Length: 243
Length: 249
Image (tube, rainbow over all chains, first blue to last red; front, side, top):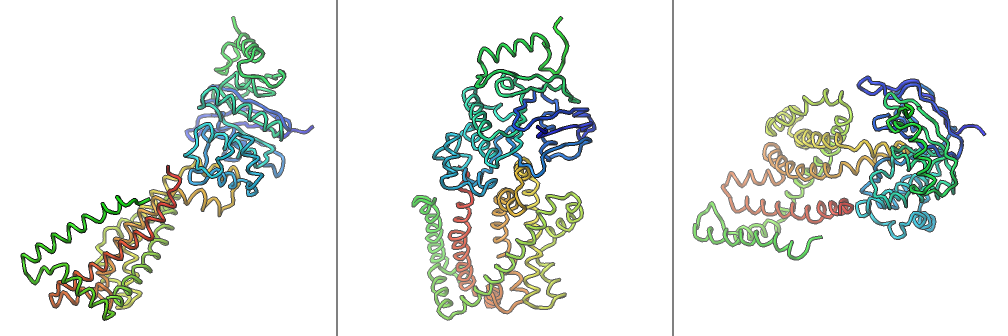
């Protein structure tokens, strides 16, 4: 099967001239869930901005399916505060009304929230709306930039399982940026580890554990320990071996 | 929503003022300070003769036209200047100049250059008002949340939706403060403009009463005028503002 996404960035500089990304390339298959893990400041958000087309000032090539639809879940929910939940969803999908809207809201556990404003929802609920918005456009490619990082553990766990349900139903290609190794291992088919800036791919790690895998399950934690035993500084982006 | 207590707390200071006024005027017994009742009497007579309606109508029309023109032009200028540094640099000098030239000067110049016409009157008011609206909206346009504009871009909203559903709602507070201040400023300037070069309108009337030292009529017109302002605020500005701010809980 051909790739859903092929990224090859020779160089991307920040406005101050520093190299953010250098010689970074990878591909993703249709329906693949790829997690990208790297230390903060490794240019993870920049990478997603480039792939989404928000940032076009880089040297390199991107191959995306033509006429692809894109979903993007940001670090913050980024809902329009002056629009109701329904209006926010209709902004990206005009057909989100009536029973279709009800079904969609039920899927993410927001049954009676259609007419509420984002300010009337908790942080977790706002993220559910943002997640639903990303899936409503029926994306072929879904970009997620540490979307659950500021949530408490139970809320984050619920949203992760919701994400997996939605992903398995429509199978978009997902790029999920995180700095949490357990989160990456519990979600992804494959994990890409980035070096600190300028970022490149330090290591590619397939995750062949059966789903569902809770973040704190023995299998996920065993893989995490195995990785960190081999590469103690992996989360800092270094492949230095344990001595 | 206004509750009876809220309404009452707006009404009673006015009642106190009226009672005080009546008391002082009765004590002073002077031509220069008529009682509120005398003013009300004149007001009724002016309404009865149709004079007040005619002049107030003329003034209102001028206020309305210049308000709309100044808002549209000022808002457009402010948006452009808030977005583009280049346009901001190009136009900033004119804004500072416009803000600081006295209304009297622009009015007289407009009358001299354009003749003692309705157009000259409106142009004079609009020129006085535009810089304030533009400066206010420039602040608004600069404060627009780029992260929400990114959402609009990623989800490929069309330009219309981008403008009306993502961009413009962020400017609502700035639009309201411009509209409020604007209306207040325009009333004042329109009266000066009428006094200087028109033969109708509240400004013209007040000018005439001044020649005859007719304080009672001046106060009667001012009263009618204030009533209209309160009415506008109550039936238009406040309900609209409450509606647009529903989401701020």
